[in-house]
Image (cartoon, rainbow, N blue to C red; front, side, top):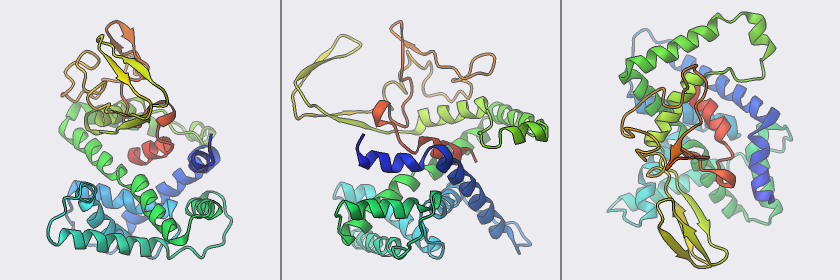
Length: 320
């Protein structure tokens, strides 16, 4: 495995992952309490805006060093993210091009403000470790700040929308909401000694996990790309064959198959909170197509060596 892949992996597993999860929880609570402090009346905010704002800010505070410019980073990021797809397709109109490039420049500036840190702390140093890695690879300062913006987008653009869809499905499906609440009540009834005994382990939440998997099955549209390294024939399950040439690039779109395949997931357009549950409330993993059991029956995080290295952190973040 290359150093490029080892670097992020080290921070998203083991002790470092546990520390980041605790930091994320603390930041979420602090942001919520700070927002409510001193308020005597209820305020209204759209569900999408709430989820995006809360998880972006908490995620930024957890992974990036600066605590002073989080509001500015969030504001600029929302502007930039809104125009990013048009920027990628070169379809910006009128003043949109100027706005997108201005936001990008401002984000580069904000993300480079904390470059002067020399702290060698472990789990808190994700950004600094990444910058040190780039420096060791000979990447110049301008490209470093560009790389930081890419990392900001990769780590923060999906958690908020995923949490929005999760809450949206729960709020519109009473049976799913009641099942999750019942599971949470069961966790709360556990005695203190049991919780203390597994303080460093995430609680078992098969019902909530199933709801999240079903949410991502219906909404996540990740793509998996591969470069063909030698000529070969790709055999499909339905008998079709494709001749691939060395140098070709192949892109898989799991949202269509397997995630929306009616043979694998009956009524694929319907939200079923218990689709990934067995009758005894354990996680279901036996899904079939043409009589063969599938290894990958939903792939919102990619699959195999292409799976997202931050999957566990992201899942924990969304479930909070």
